[in-house]
Image (cartoon, rainbow, N blue to C red):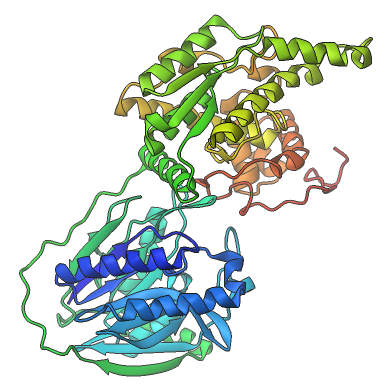
Length: 576
């Protein structure tokens, strides 16, 4: 049997566009002589559709589009993710063959953690169809159903399924792919079956999906692997008639555990109108997945591209300070949208160094992006004069400093309003975590490219980007970071050094470690207490920050939903 995994990039809510996408890739799979083509989870609606599924008209329209897809499956089988309605609403997979919907599977395990809210929308399924397609017994499942060893896949294998198809909307974060594939491969080995695992690809709001679709043989070995972070049609020939060895005790144990789910097994036989003829042999492709900085960079570029293009934005505008964050943001934007669609703006104040102006210009020149200049000195003086009566007799401080980023934000958003650009903010996760940014100033924007990227990772990505071509001057990566809002200012005036700060942030935010655990891990107790205080008191700022791509296991926003008003102290109840 020749399987095709259609790793496609749908758009949430674009039902007709997603249908055209599915039909196009069905045709590609048919031309490649595939017997069955598998599409990602909820491909008809895009993933995740969130509260759209609460609209009866949306569910009805998605079912109508599924009928249109079914009509295009002459001579081929397809597995398509959609929202089903059968009294309740279900996250479903349709098995379609030769123009007809033959069977429907309802997702059993509904994730309700991290970025997932599926119990808000769907009911757990009980239908468990096993399809005999031209002599090959096939079981279907959806995403989370694969993560539980004693789940529907075990039950299907116990009932003789030799090919288990699992369709996915599995969001990306760094470090996820390897354990995910080890898990899926383990299921194949445990069940003694081929497992075809297809994932969506592309950006959706704060999420990005990495693709990396894969087929495992019954021993748990990958025999075909799609590309990372691009659309791909992965073809794989499998021979389900070859004898295999599987531990009957292991399968029986998992299947007995799955019995508690009370799944309703329905078996049906599907035959092609004409006997399948031999096909020219293909070599199953094993693409090398992206890893490290290359993977993160590609994920952020894809997410930025899709966030802009799926909303119809053509150009972006970025405040270029001459620092490393704005340089990396500009490089990502140029790679995602094309340099002709990126406008960089220098906005020097009396505190801006000549080196910073020069560095910003060099970045713009290297990337081939447009550069504009506006001095903020006139409005800066004007605001100081307006405020001087009420500020008289006080010491200059943060209020005076923050006039500058707020003036810059006003200029950027004026350009946005006038010409339809979207403002990319340039703050990173380390700054957002600690509140080191100006509300309605440098925090403001339409999209925060670096929102989930720590400062130390910013440096890593800059070094990687320079391996692709000149982009970021060495001086930008070696000079001490500074907001340049007052003479001689350095980030370390307000924050611990980033190489000390970032590991504490990762432990506290991404791993939920307590202060005691962080200290036990070797971090300085005073620094730990200081960082935790900065993080906890900055929630109100983060809540007003723009969306940005998730690339870590715990991003601000959907992943980490802390109350703004919160008197809990992680230091054992002692007042902060």
